[in-house]
Image (cartoon, rainbow, N blue to C red; front, side):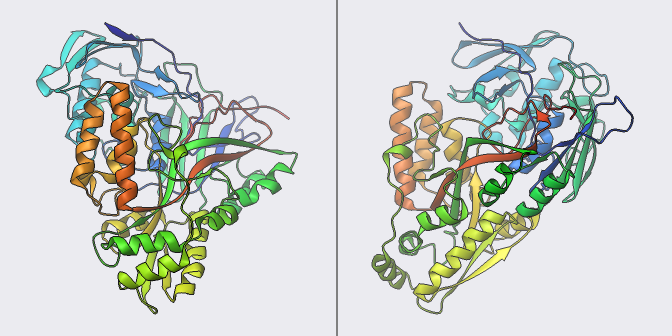
Amino acid sequence: MKKFGVALLAMALLFLTACSGGDKKEAGEDPVLKVAVSEDTSTLDTAEVNDDYSENIIIQVYDTLVKRNADGELVNSLAESIENPDPTTYVIKLRDGVKFSNGDPLTVDDVIFTLKRAAASEKFSSFYGKIIPDSYEKKDDNTLQFKLSEPDAAFLSSLSHPAVSILSQKFIEGGADPKTELMGTGPFVLDEWVQNDHATFSRNENYWGDMPKISGIEMKVIPEASQRIIELESGGVDLAYKVDPNDLEQIESNDDLQVFKTLDNSVHFIGFNMSKPPFDNKAAREAMINAIDMNSIFDTVYLNSGKLATSPINPNFKYSIADDLKPNAVNKEKAKELFQEAGVTEGTTLSIYTSDNTQRVNVATMMQDQLSEYGINLDVERLEWGAFIDALKANEHNMFIMSWNPSIVDAHYELLQPFHSSNKGNGPNYMYYSNDELDKLIAEGISTLDENKRAEIYKKAQELVNEDMPWLYICYGETIVAGNKNVEGLKLLPKYPQELKDVSIISQ
């Protein structure tokens, strides 16, 4: 019997919240952490979550059964233990004494309700649909068992995804709107969410773990990277997310500020819309890859923060072949020939869509300049996040700029959502890409438990994606957060959402 060790997760830092050391209602009261975040989400429903911005709020309020800590280790959270007596059977024992923020106890029924809801969702049926619906069994008040229809090499890791943040069955079935109303077992309670403006949280007085050292969180949506730093320098916020590398020198020279950095699990890319001309033609995609000087863009925009990308699987993930490949090189003559072959002639106008992210806007602007050498006009469409996603879903674009950082740290999930045909037209597969052979490899990889065989499968899958060229790679990213010197306890996760429960503000 395989048994996964019980490791109590002390929730470290959260996604979009920061605190102000001097912001206290009364002397002696714990401060509110104020954080400047770059963008907001369009929904908080865990069954629909598909971006870092929603997870940023969700992980403050909800807990999952297991989670990954800052060291990349999968540790228990609401689960006290998880046993795997055979490849398809899971026995989960819940932690004693856990309550939702309203005081209701966490039950096995809540876990079953959550798993069934995720399995029934369009976005996550491929994650959790392997659970046999009538296999759920309540062993006792704190223990449940269920079976999968087939082995799933990434299933344990999938229990850390925000889609299976444990919900209160009574709360949801009682009429709460999960898109805007949240009630969880996590360290904070969401008090107010004004989309594209702010979100405020207070401490969950019924939290099962160590109580947060801050009384609450205030997330401020500030799209401009430079403005986030101004807010930090002025004391308006205590943490600033998504720091532009151009601002690092300024921050590091300020004795009142500090920088937190770690190589993250993201892949930044330019996606080609393969559902319509010109990028339904591989020659056009290959032409663009040969035309764009990504090394120059990486050096200028990212200041070499991170690493030039070569594969759809980040080198932090097992089975990645990224380090064995060389970044794309510019070949202007080849680009001109391929553009001609694809019918992309002088005077052609293309569009590239981007969110308000400063780096992405700068990438698009540099591409605009580089393509002018080929007589190609590039319209840069800059939109706030919700409008950006709506435009991609409406298939308005020729190209778009995005990043992918799966919440489940497994090679399968690096490939599934961006490239599987079942996700065509859903984020981040706004390339509208599909390949039957790749679909088969993705299915084979998740059902194979032998690690050597999985390595062979994922090598083939990465090579196939690179052959089809749905993406023009930018880089593997770096998570950079800036903070005031009086902020302590931030253990940076290799992604945008950060857990903030253990963050504290020391007196100066």
